[in-house]
Amino acid sequence: MYDGMLAETTAINGHGGDLIEAYCARPLGPGPFGSVVVIHHLPGYDAATKEIVRRFATLGYVAVMPNLYSREAPGARPDDAAALVRAQGGVPDDRLVGDVGGAAAYLRALPNTNGKVGVIGYCSGGRQSFLAATSLSLDAAVDCYGAFVVGAVPEGMPLKVGPIVDRTHLLNCPLLGLFGSEDKYPSPEHVQELRQALEVAGKTYEFHSYDDAGHGFFASDRPSYRPAAATEGWQRIEEFFARYLGA
Image (cartoon, rainbow, N blue to C red; front, side):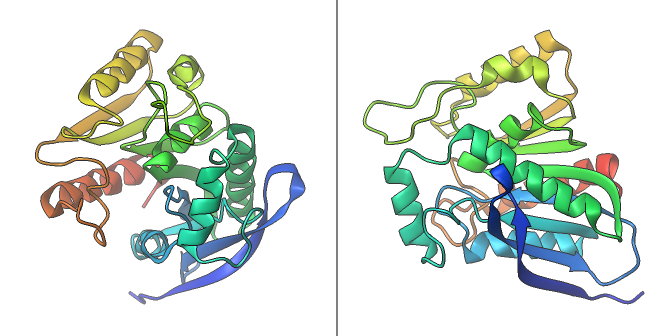
């Protein structure tokens, strides 16, 4: 079987019809392929998250990552853009939903996709993945240690976001949650509160927590990286998306 992919910078229509930068990777083949919107973490639209986009292409998905900081810092280094957006309180929730919705529409319009779209996010992106899955018509969602789905932002943090667990009843697709047992945001207690909300709402979900892992255990370029947890976590993601998006 031919094995190849194309990865490139592109542009999509985001919230309010704004044209924003995005990074897309897709298998070179007729498909049809499932597709994934990748939401980058708070450090931004960086090389590590672009590598995740390419990994999904090797798994047989068309993936796209919108640059959520396109408006504030076009062309800026990821660290500089992240610092600017963090100081402004983060990405507004309504704009995030519009940008992910635009990314999903972009994927569905491609000729080699099967119409099924999942979303995945890490850190702040995990919360945003949950937000998107309670706001848009999607087929699967993955929350990788998303902070402040449950629990308020501590005093002194500049982020202007609030908990969104009260939106659980609006979740319209299966949810996979991957967490570190040594994380503080979300803590094991936060994860349990979200689990209880999902149970009460009768939603389809599966959660996995990993010992000796804290926040950012997927980040292979950071000291928080935990190879065993990340390896198993990726296996869970592959199985989950294969089940709901088609491999």
